[in-house]
Length: 286
Image (cartoon, rainbow, N blue to C red):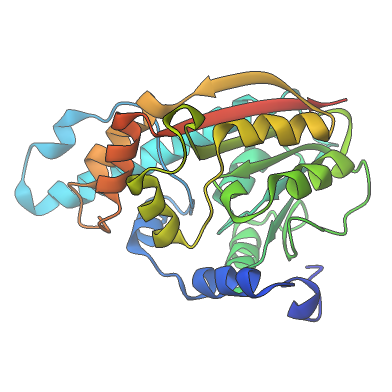
């Protein structure tokens, strides 16, 4: 049974949150939908790893589908890397997908660990879609999605063995976010994020980073803010992995696909000029 809150005023508390929810409720971007249709895992994040150059060869009439399938392989590889860093998870554990989108990473986590997964999103459309997917997959007894605010989920204190954000931290205040994660995690539990952040060394948002903010109605944080906010909330980084170089091939391939949106150039510019980093941070709750 889905524990959806009865009124969006309890979840969407500011005009900004309402605008973000409206964006994702209306979103039907082929870059998310078509890739998910490859195998039924619908993601809302980018990819990592080198792409197979053979997808650009061969018959022209099937070239784009080959690119779509390869992009999906890369985004699924990104989710696998995140799950690799969650630490030991057992079937009796409970974990949270924070900003769960259409549920792809949640289903991967359940398939890998056999655990219970609670996904939270401020998009009612995403929650409905993901819960329908859970029913179709026959895992709705273990994987549930909730219309809730990631800054105040309402779940029990200390109830989660692990939690994560996969490219969703740029929509909220990091101190508030990590306070909620620290509350939810049991002692020694693990928090993981994969996120884009701007480089403090370059002195503020570059033009390319600002274009990304505008495109996604988000507010990209500086790299240093993550570590300040974690430290303030009892989250101690155990692994910090710079995935910037690993994500560039995905964006280069996406720029050559039919699902390119025009945001590919700012991403590639920002990554290559060093004003933007793609990081994985894994931290323990102490």
